[in-house]
Image 1 (tube, one colour):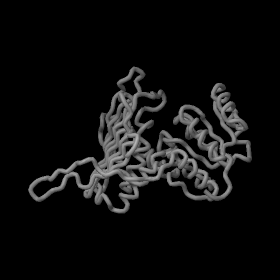
Image 2 (image 1 turned 180 degrees about the vertical axis):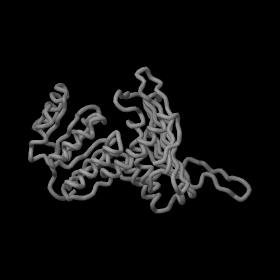
Image 3 (image 1 turned 180 degrees about the horizontal axis):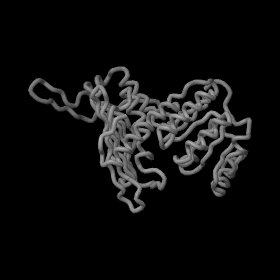
Length: 330
C-alpha cells in the first residue's frame, strides 16, 4: 500500500462492524467509531485507547480529517448513510448489500461518480486468497468452458428482522459467480419459505441462467444445523471445490472426474488435488485494498457499480421469490 493512510471512521460497530474496527485499527487508519449503542462505544473506548467514539454521525461528517468512512449499519440504512457521507465529501465503503433497491444503488453510484468520490462494497469473498486463486485458474482456462457453479451458504442463526436471508447471505456468492462467468444472468428463479415464527424468509434456493449456457445455483439458510460455506465451479476440464468450513486444504481441483469415452462415462472422482494459495485474512485484504484505493485514487475491485449489479440480481430474485419462483429477466 502506497500513499498516505487515510483517517477512517467506522459507522456501526455491531456484529460485523466490530471486525472492521479491528482491522482498520491494525492497519493504522482508524480515527473514529460511531454507534448508537452506549455499551458498544464504552467497550470500543476500553479496547482501542486513543480512538474517538461518538453516537453522533454529525461528528464524523464535520471532521475534515476523516477522509473515508466504512458503513456497517443495518442494510435498510445503507442508502441514507452512504448518500450523506458522499455529500460531505467522504470516500465510502459499504458492507453488503449496497442497498435494498437497484434504483437506490444506481443513485449512489452516480452520486459518487459526480463528486469524484470512491464507493466500494464489502463483497468479502473476492478478497479470500482461495477465491482469488479460483478466479485465476478459471481465467487461465484450467477448467475449460464453465458448465455450472453452485454455492451453499448455510448456518444456524443469526436471524434478521429487517432483510431476509437472500439479502443477508447471497450477495457474496452472486458477486463471485458473476465475476467468474463474466456477466449477469439473463434470468433468475428463487423459491423459499419463512420457516421460523417471525415470518422473515430464512431459507432460499436460487437458480441462474446465463447467456452462454452456464447454470448457477445458490442455496442459503439460517436454519442449517451446522455451518457450510462451499463454492463449486465445474468446467469441461475439471472441477474446483472451495470448502471454507474445512480447517485446511480448503481448495481442491478434480481433473475430469467424469470423462465421456464415446459409449459411456469413465468415473474417477478421487480425493482431488489440494491447491495452494497465499495465507492472508480476507477482511484485512479488503480493508487494505480500500485504503490503497483511497490513497492512490484507484477504482476498487468491488466498486459501487459492481455492487449495483449484484443488487439488480437480488431484486430479480426477490421478485421471483414473491411470485412463487416465477422466472424473472435481469
